[in-house]
Image 1 (tube, rainbow, N blue to C red):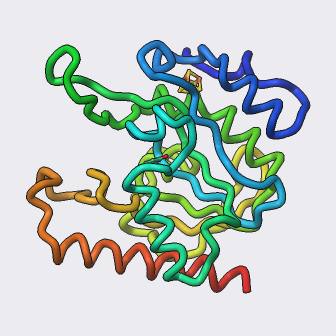
Image 2: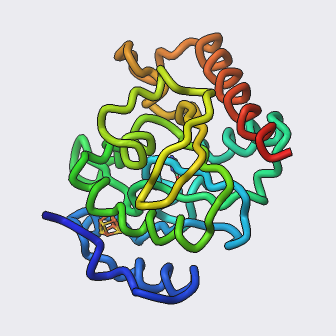
Image 3: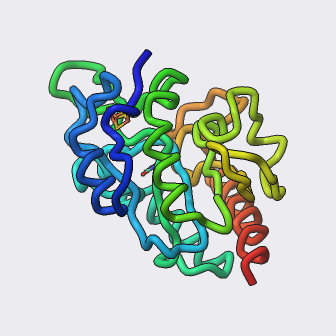
Length: 220
Ligand code: URA
Ligand code: SF4
């Protein structure tokens, strides 16, 4: 099975983890992506935000949530009363998975599968062990399945506080949807993003803010 395990150093700080992750060959996703996009933030952060995987912009810049979804997330966090700069931000999968309709055309995001989530899990476990956040904000279905198992239905538990053992440690989590304009927003209805109506987007955004407030209140 694919796994990052042999690439994860047994000891060392976040900088050491990041250096090691740059050379990860734990699953095939490293082959086509530009670089590993490791987590970003302070080791003392009280909150860890976990997304799905880097997108196109993140893959180019090497940092999580710097593209359109990240901009929206920052806005939602601020509106919910937390400081986006204070969170440790990472993804369940550290390489961009994509497809192209035609050679040299735009790269189209592809959701990572269970194999890649499982392969990449040791990096997330190592980040959790070092940062020891008081709260994990789970951004969307992929992060939810990576952390809480493949039977998790994010739509059923979003905005609630879960207490679960993750990689052998008791953790407190608040799941929510992935920040729009991501495709994962459309959970049950398979509507292409361009067709997502403005009011749906606004409703989804307000839902995200409401869930993030649940997390923000836990820390005050
Ligand atoms: N979406 C994610 O899940 N993670 C990122 O880093 C960017 C977009
Ligand atoms: Fe390693 Fe994760 Fe990248 Fe796969 S996606 S190569 S496991 S860092």
